[in-house]
Length: 341
Length: 124
Image (cartoon, rainbow over all chains, first blue to last red):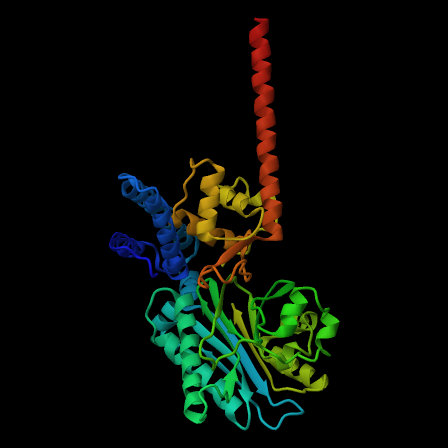
């Protein structure tokens, strides 16, 4: 924030400290947004420039803090009382299972996709930072694409688990930005022209922590959530065809033959990149699918849904890959399915 | 990790905070502070919601499937990319309609009773 006055800076610091009174899970999910709302509110109150503005502002904030703290802790206590001890321990241990598979496809000489699923062995780390799943689809000549996608998944994991900030969504964003920077540095080191671009990668990353999935996305790899009979795409593709489809310029049927179907306008490896962040509530039984476009361009959403719902996770990933290959396998194919049980 | 209730009436009555947030989202998606402003404006400044109440309610509304996060950025140029936008789900729209219907029925009953009372008072 560039327009912080000393008063505002002090008030914001004080409020940030007060936010530590909230239960950790609440803080992790909403701290950044609450700070932003606090700053917006502060500006609104100070705009009136009355001598009582600051007093009235803090009256609202402290009143809100007191009431919402009681509500949040009441919820925590009720949840604890409702669940028998064994169930609570299982819940705290986060029962997550996953399966992952990547395949070169039928037409390519190299597999430039990379994937990573990580469930920390350390129970405390799992409880604080959750499980991480990353899928990346590398772009570039020779083995550069492969290098870029590997660099992306490794960097996201390394940086995410080193980040101790409370807000998990922000930690995930920073991890993806760090991956962008590393790939860009490789690009700069390799090319004689600073503007010459040699490699890049898409990146979709999901953190599963307690009852929330934090999702970061750059490019056209995807994350879906399946619950009951429904499956929904969480991420938004940064591709020309996805934008045209959303705007109603083309139909779903026209996507496969579109001359620019492979063109994406955001990827890691650029000088600056904007990372989309989504948060999703997750429930027992939910499944998450992460995949590269080698799968989701060929196999439509209905079929993805029916495979993921019908089979266990191991069989799902195998069947997803097989289905993409049956349809020609023109690209590398990667699928990761995680289940919250 | 509870399964959401799929019948709108199971979630009624809504708390005042939840109802205010849902009404603020009836005409489109908004980010947190925009919801706070809308609630204050619509109530003529009488209802002021702080960040704790707002995000506590948002968390539970997301878990109940009443609202969802939207990926759209209405004005990307002016907007901070870290802001999250929320919108009503189809289920949320059904719940808010059911709540309004419930309140209407109470108001009707209250009117009916007070009118009867008055007419009885007049007769005496």
